[in-house]
Image (tube, rainbow, N blue to C red; front, top):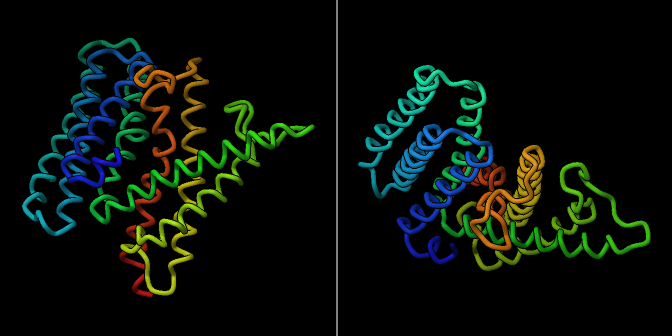
Length: 273
């Protein structure tokens, strides 16, 4: 993943399209969606990723002709979604509301967040890499601190025991500390130069880390709640010993659109003040 992000935009786009498709298929298998709906969802995911890649690449200013292609793809995406909804009528489906809900949930909860990273990538690829490095750093800090505090006589304070019994408030704080420390190290090496205004480097870096840590944790809890509701331990078996694709990218699902919005805000709005 690190190699594709740093190598070339096409390598990045191909990798994350592959991840999106796998995650979408994994979700629909978990909820038992009919085969036709899975096909519609996968095609919609491909169109959505291609659309956002076109618009993001066009914003970079090097491929202005992609704007028209993005419009065509977005229209195709909307028509496909409408066709998928109408298909439930033609097939006399026994559970149209569940199928419609699963289609929109999969697009909004999985495809759109991962596809939105295109706008972050074409702002600066180091920001995408920073997002993942800070997520990994946060998870490491949360695990280490949470495990150590769990050995105390009275244990630690559970954050949401009915969803994820091992997550604790102590681990959350430990993740914050590790994430902020890692972010400042990345700032030192210039990974945040694209969004930093002179004199605001420390503040911008700290907010970036806190947003990643907070929404990454909530993304993890969101996926844990989904699995607990479905009565499964792992979302899939794509990565032996680690579960499925959703298990590996759950922290990104909420953090990606938040961080993308924050970075563009820093890039466009903050310099005005």
